[in-house]
Amino acid sequence: MGKPDRIGDFQFGKDKIKVNGVLPSVLTRAGNNSASTLNSLVDSVFIDANGATSGNQGLGTNSAALVVSTAQGIGGTYLIVNDGGR
Image (cartoon, rainbow, N blue to C red; front, side, top):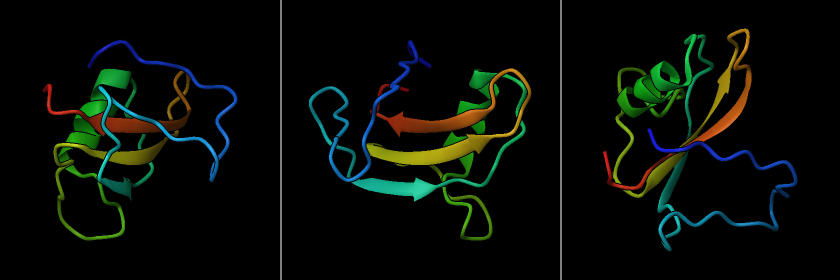
């Protein structure tokens, strides 16, 4: 995991996020997650990026997933992006 960025003024439907100059080609919604660290949260999303489908669907290259952390201390909504650097 690289350095996480915090975006406080993102406007859905207006703003876009590019990673290394590339827009993610797929966006999914991972299931809510109770991992206690950001590294564990990211690892679990890389294993299963789609909470709507049973089984594990890995986070593909140039794909992104939204995930809600329910863990104390890191709770919130995260956008996890696989830019192929992992």
